[in-house]
Length: 175
Image (cartoon, rainbow, N blue to C red):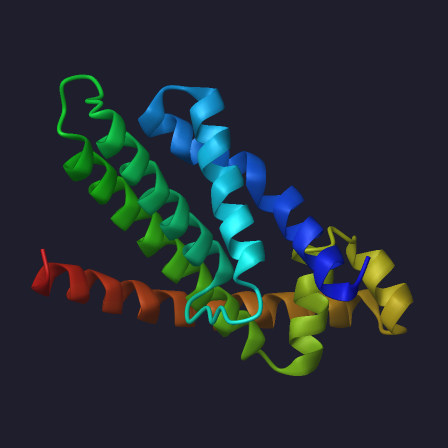
């Protein structure tokens, strides 16, 4: 198995179930939803040599599953709960894209933290390490770990407020 195949398998394992649940919300048929997701991954694998993804991978996958789900529903002329499917799905999809964009902006804010601060923060929040474990691994005092985490949270809080203010303004101008 080459490196691409290994990465593809990891991506498949990470995203298959959440994407199937996402598609299932609209198809109300788990087998059909899984088929949709399987087809998206198959198409992605088949086009691996010339595919260019210009957004986050998560956003791309959800958009592809959304499009494929809508194609299947249109072909089968299904309506869900008497509500116009396109409008309902488009609204939920917009919400999902906004969430993905917000997560991306948070990650950019984390990446912009000073290196030491970022390392301590990610070890604490992403890796779930205790302050003591971090201090041992980095050979710094527990107090330094606490200070770095506080500094990271303060900087992130400032950046998140800026992001939220921008998003609120954007959505107020573009209802």
